[in-house]
Amino acid sequence: MAEDSWDQDATRVVEALNLLTVLAAPRLYERWSTQVPAVELRTVLQSRMAALAAFCEKAWGSPDADRFRSAAPKVRALAESLAAAPTGHLMDLSWNAQARECLDALGVQAPPGGWETFEGLPPSGD
Image (cartoon, rainbow, N blue to C red; front, side, top):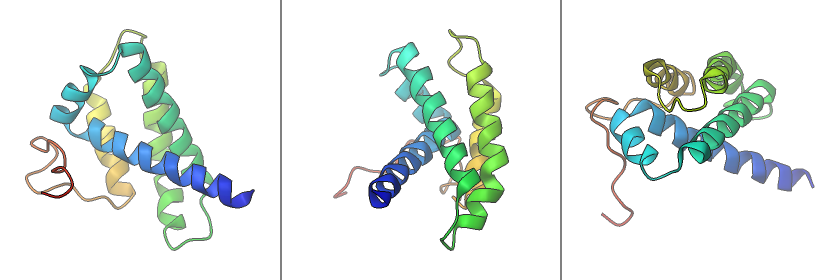
């Protein structure tokens, strides 16, 4: 059972990290937000960031556990910012900065050219 939980946590962490990347890169976020209904977008963002914050707060047993725990307050602050935004509000400029701070705290470096110009990774096989 513990392995299932770890697999689920790992999947949620990867999804949340991908969403942090989207939030950090305005061009990606703009493209993504036009492909997803607003209500679904908010639900996904809120739930993934809350799950990542919870994961970071309880991280243990790996070489990266300290990094996750130290990033927890930044991730929690972003999750709370997302949850507190008005329902129709899909973007706040502070979310870009907060996502970048979270990624930096988690050890994810900005892409070449920075987050402002990043439009995603090329499709596999390119």
